[in-house]
Image 1 (cartoon, rainbow, N blue to C red):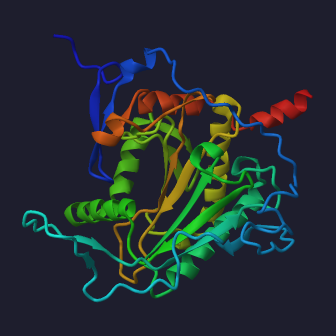
Image 2: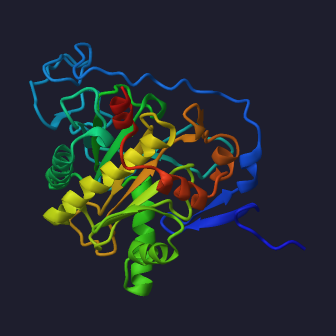
Length: 365
């Protein structure tokens, strides 16, 4: 009987943050591809686009006009998914939906009002930049705005969770190429943070330590999934990664939320984000698409000492700039699955330069 080799044989990996298993099938990297091929977008945007509804001074889709902003700019989303004037849930919490009887079923369908608010953060007035291409000082300002939004929205008595995120690229559903992210603030704790909340609380109760602090210790010892690090943060391809080049950014210092980052740690966050996103762009020499978001403690006024500040990056590209990972079939009906191992993805990212590929192109020309 042959000996098990995780670099060759199908196997499952456990995600302690969510309690889910992920199927890894490394042998499938050899399969031919005759599926959908994406057309990489032309990344030749101007510094200012008069037709862009996020550029300074332009009219937005909702008819409001942007001020002539010169740094990071925040505004209420004109087409928000959450609305602050939504009625609050009653004390009974759930609203039953009474349907016609069908064979004496005891099932009750319920819903619940969800007040909240959504904001857009324009990272830069320049239309042609991304986080990877921004100056470190400007990226540091973005970090400060994230902290301000977390504190401001989290202080509202009816907001119990603040989700800060960025969808980069049309492939990830971004409707505008101008560098921007979003903040959605919820009355209730959404599904993914709720799963992480339970897992981190359980681990803390059993061991008296942070789950991610202990995980980070394992990764620093193993080295094989490390991507990039600085004095304050470490980026790894997590052992349980689902997306091909998925990464997990973890603070070395165990803090529950970004507002507790010291000034030098905020500089460190800007630094690690620039270095990571530059490596992403350099994999296929394109503006690499991804969804990124910070996970941190709820803002319900309760202590959450078990929460450990971190960020997830979920990029869809698989083999090249034109071949993406699809979450279909087995993934939708059974469970997450990946082909390339997290170790090989981390090695690929480690090999990437931290000098953006466009710098090389401009010097050649």
